[in-house]
Length: 278
Image (cartoon, rainbow, N blue to C red; front, side, top):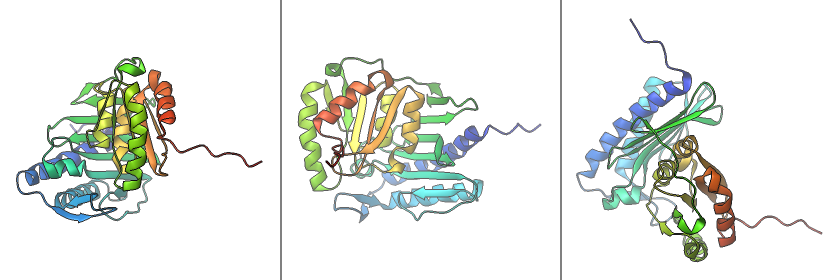
């Protein structure tokens, strides 16, 4: 007797998880050999490896087989239009520099949007095998898990006791702005971590390993899946404009989010609000 079909978002999550596991196997195998830079993108330090490209091709092939009418937005390939109302947002290796250097903090990230809203996502740490998943159930509640077990953000603590992760953009001018903001932020919190993967940073907030995360220069494929995982675990996620004019993401447990946002704004991470002409 065949099983009944999964609810839509859970079905999409199953497709994402299948593709992510296959891509992770490919990337893991490539990590055992010599990893070299295949090309650079926005700057000499913004790199892509052949494993990035191969993993995205594999993911696209899996998605095309399972759901041929869906759209795809991927970091390394052309945008693919669809007719189903579903769009996949794919980052084959989030944390490519870590992968290049053999640092065990890089992930396959796949999210599914329905009519522009993310309803399912997976972030799979290739180096450790840990799987973070999230989906929106039929009641509109987001369910987040690590290796199948529910996860929850850390209880909010005073700012001075918060461990916050960040990242730095590829443009030298943006890095200078971020360094200045960091000088203001660092003395007012417990400490800073720079781990190198937006998707995994968001998941670490979700599982209570971090008290917050802020970074400018991210793209949708970096945070689409991880943000859903964080929200389902009790975090607030805001995507706004940073001081350098790029996309900035801020994430923290919901009950401590406003306080951290005020500090991040005072430090200079956010774009200055527009002033009215008189």
